[in-house]
Length: 125
Image (tube, rainbow, N blue to C red; front, side, top):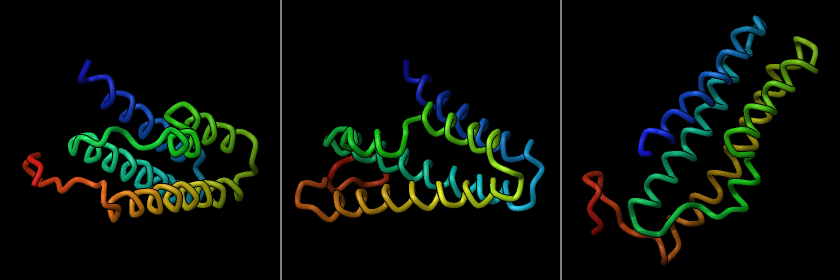
């Protein structure tokens, strides 16, 4: 059971990067790496919330950024429906929106009084 989340993450990251590489459009791969970075930060934030004992991020956040399947579907639709020149712009916009939503919620949570102090060793302070 512990291996399922990393497999889903690897599949999501791989699918996004593969679709961008397959598009063979200048700027698509860097935009895809930006999207993967924003999602990876969300996953990192989720892990530290759980390690701190506060549980996963709110459900509205997961719905707002699409979940694994939603993000892969969105990127696949963008790749299929947009002209080549518009694909990197759409990926960049998607990455920026996801990064903004995730960062605002993360900062809001970690500066709140309910946030735990979690050390890198996994022990709470």
